[in-house]
Amino acid sequence: MAEVKDLNGLRRFAADKMQKVGLFETPRMFCDLYCLEPGQAQKAHSHGEADKVYLVLEGRAQIQVGAERFEVGPRQAVLAPAGSDHGVTNAGAERLVLYVFVAQDSGGGAPSKAGHQHDHGHRH
Amino acid sequence: MAEVKDLNGLRRFAADKMQKVGLFETPRMFCDLYCLEPGQAQKAHSHGEADKVYLVLEGRAQIQVGAERFEVGPRQAVLAPAGSDHGVTNAGAERLVLYVFVAQDSGGGAPSKAGHQHDHGHRH
Image (cartoon, rainbow over all chains, first blue to last red; front, side, top):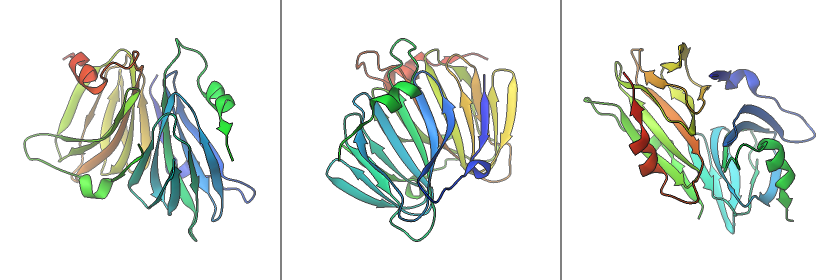
């Protein structure tokens, strides 16, 4: 079934931590909004068989992929390929909203998002 | 390797047809900008094992998925799940820019994008 989402209406922030808002999910991918108040971050982590693409919708992001760090703003996108450590920080003074896409092998239809989150190897 | 793209600098339009600008590609996914002048369209087609997500960056899109039609604008996103006929038309008076993500099974690392394009079954 087709699904339609209005990202403006789904932005959601919290003082204690970054908010992740689920948009779409299939066996092959999922798509989220990440909403970060200034100073908030998603710590660097990796997943072996999933590629992640960040697109900045508003604010400024410091995105880490492997040993590299990128400062990006609206309409800039960053690919973190499978196996690379990656993380994001809102190092700016404004709120940060990212549109985040993760593609993974469907593994024959196994539950995708739950498996993904479980597989996060937080290395820090 | 990480990659960074600035979408503003990559927009490209042509009078004869919709322009598709490749952004990222891995065995599991690819990501493009679609740039449509008023009246231009990508005709409805389907791919069996690939999910597509459209995000409108500017302009207004009429997106068809199966028998449904959605009128969407900036920051609205539409999922066309694998197997569904889908297409897009710029029915407005302004230019339309879409950020389009396709997730597919990697098929053990076979070339992805070429295979995808070859598999397009244009049904109309």
